[in-house]
Image (tube, rainbow, N blue to C red; front, side, top):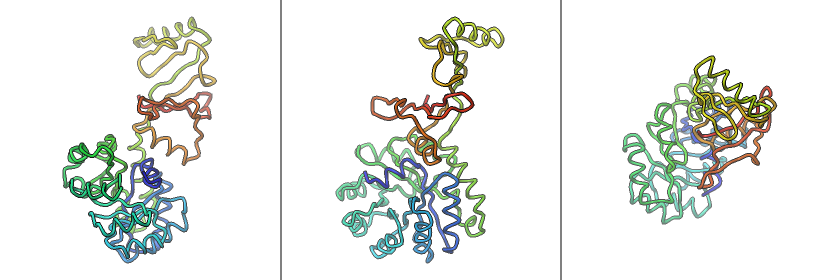
Length: 320
């Protein structure tokens, strides 16, 4: 898979942007980056699109800025010359797609049918757009389409919102989702970039689903651990579950039988998507201890510690 598309998969949400005035491009990009989504698909539906892509790309070279609603090879050239790192087309235009493939430009064409998907495969693509997603049957339709094409992933757009995005991202056939609910053109035209940043941050927070899984308390030995666990049980009637290294008092409190990781213990934070959570934290400058990482049988990370302690507690991410 193309490196740009791999990076988009780690971000998870691709804001689909319609910009009427190029002056809004930089503050919009700034709001998206601060909100946690350093990418954008700028649709070629307005005269300002090309200049907007140029301004975003120059001001924020680390941002993945692409061009959407691309209909011609001439628009491909204009978009790429302006700084677009990827191209998205609403349907499967063989001429446009082949033009991008021949020039090694990442392209995601709209492929709502099996014939379109097979045409994309014939040109060597492994990611396609599904548009308009909700109108065409949503995630159920994508799963049905994906069944014969094991190597294809989808980037659905159209009707994706804060309420249904996780139902798409939960499917391993989804690369990322395109959405515009956090970047509505009415907000952009009104200059409400603080609101866009807040909506973007909310979208990222809901997607990643960070929440406390459990808190672990270090003890010197098994005897002390049992005494501490009994205190929780006697005071609050919490049921105990003993495992080789600790006692769990409900699923939220773990009492370690020895001084485990962290000065005082550790805190487990659950996330919905490990790869996206790791990428998000690293973009924020958080250091991760890859020596602590655990992986499932498919090679996907399921667990990792942060390097820095929080108030004397080690912190790790987990899926369960």
